Image (cartoon, rainbow, N blue to C red; front, side, top):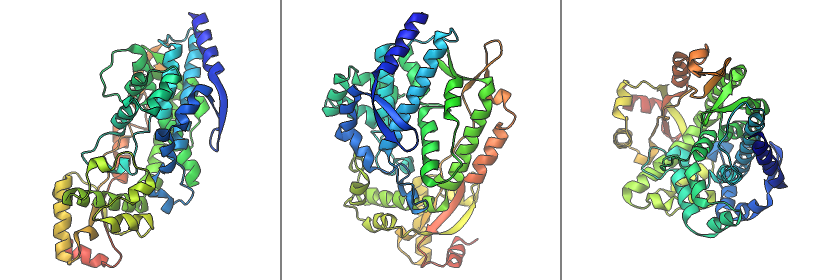
Length: 415
């Protein structure tokens, strides 16, 4: 078995024959057979979609794209895979890995975001396809991307199975790769926290990636982390909190994303757009959508964002929250408030961020090869502390054009 793992590791490294220079990870080495995949129009489109959408209006350096993030996820996925193989070589774990499976996993890392369209994360409340389902569909379409994947010696259907966890699968190797690609310490998170912090010019998201990848292990096809690396898990969770507080959910970012969501909702309501119109777009195409609410799209594009007119801590049982608990009620509330103020419906936007968790589900490998839950060992990120973090981030906000006085909004709310 040790010889098998040695052979797999040798094959893994031997495949990496050309490199792409990345500002975060420096040289990212890939197989030559992946060049047609990277050059395919489906993947290249990611280079025209900003990773953080409108956040560059707040942090001008945040113009990095989903393409460079995808390369970064490939790189971190490679680091994790090579670390796990080294551990298996020394008898510390048993892996169900094969050469074809490893290559399939790395392809999934590279292509995990191809289903993304602009502002996809901001539109989760809308009845739209998940980006994972779109990615699987794009791969299975038998087009140029599918052919490029086949030419690399990979089955496209297997790549889709790793990316979209909702697809039924009982293959142990695929289950392992799914577990690596999506979890507390997954390559997606380890890249985007570092990359977003780097391009925003803030220190909050930086992770000790080499240490984390060295401390990961596999127990019964489940990814776990050694007990001595618990501090790294705590650091990641706190970094996530700080990045949400200062970047992802900053009021400027929230204003822009709320305006886009409002424009899409109004366009769906009047029939000028539907969900299918959004899929497959890049940033430029998105802002050129033939919508009846083009002025809102243009305002976000040109950094003419609505200002914060009202803010309070989110309370699930609060009176305002009850009146806006789903999108239908929210739009009715906005329309009524706009009527009281004598302004167009598009001038009133209620923004409520989705629930977010600061809990970790990754198992901790303790002395004696005993697996324990992270929350059973950790004294910092308890359930109560996680709720405090969430409460401090989630705000009930109302955004309006600056022409509407804040006092007028308060009076219209009858507070």
